[in-house]
Image (cartoon, rainbow, N blue to C red; front, side):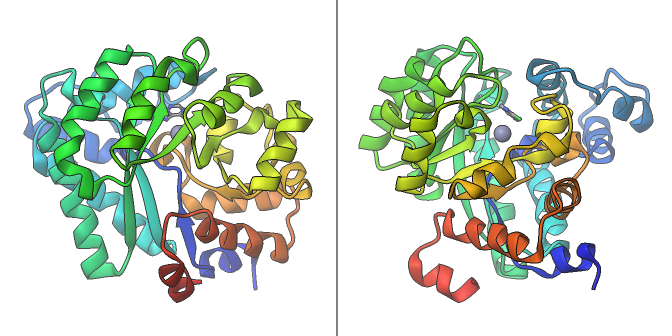
Length: 326
Ligand code: ES4
Ligand code: ZN
């Protein structure tokens, strides 16, 4: 059995996925046209050619521009449903997805429109395809604390749909400490917490995410290997890291997948998982991410199975739900 088929056959969970990052160029043009909006590129091929990034910020500029054609609830439904059908083909059984409300509310789209479209597609995915899900609301860290507080207020009526809050966007210069009070309030309101940390930022940002934001999972966390005490803490507490190999390659977080820290992390007993981050922009969904690291790092079948097991272990499914799937 080929490594491709082996990976495709294993049930997997996706824990680090920005729904706005699943916006495929073809769907982007379709939705732009029906909303009478112009895209800065003349066609799908021209748009795809722009997907070459030297760092996180160059990607974010294009990602926010792409998301700006999403206007109606049906647009958010179509975006999410396209992702769900894609993961269904890849034997992904459970997804925990991020959405960025401020990307939309800042251009006049109401919070309700965004969450209603996403939630309805997730419910359909559960009913029709048996894919379970959690929804995580991310604050944009390049915006200020008061904007994050306002977003948290808007989320309160939807508490039963939102399992947790996260932190994404431009990392360097926007440390977790900037959002300590917002996360404190979110925890009081019953949300779980995660944060992007140590993608481009230093290992001290991972410490802040754990100590100040009380995160129970770290998104990326690549830079933790710079700090031996931090590695021991993450391993002892089995705080999961949601790694995104093709994202790291495309954003030049690693120069080559052969340099990816995944195996070093496994050797240090860290609970690491493989995820796709923004698959429409980085050239691969879950199976492509697994395959790319399996080939670059010569992973054994045992290691691949371990990574898939980790994805359920690190998920927010309840114990009985985990036992049913794993
Ligand atoms: C993101 Cl790869 C990445 N890093 C930080 N913020 C993000 N938002 C969407 N993708
Ligand atoms: Zn991310």
